[in-house]
Image (cartoon, rainbow, N blue to C red):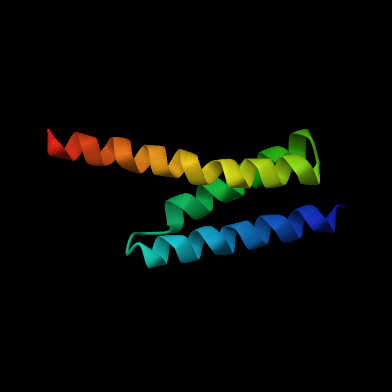
Length: 75
């Protein structure tokens, strides 16, 4: 068992939870997505590098999603 991957997964979930709280939005969807990415990386590659890449990639993906969703509300 790679405890480094588990520690990164927990830390990433906490970061996404806190980010959701800071934006006054429900953090649960982003925490769930972070856990899903962690589970996929642990299952498929087990690499610390890919765990970090996957978690860091969530930030721009969430930003793109939020911009897209806000654009739908303006119409």
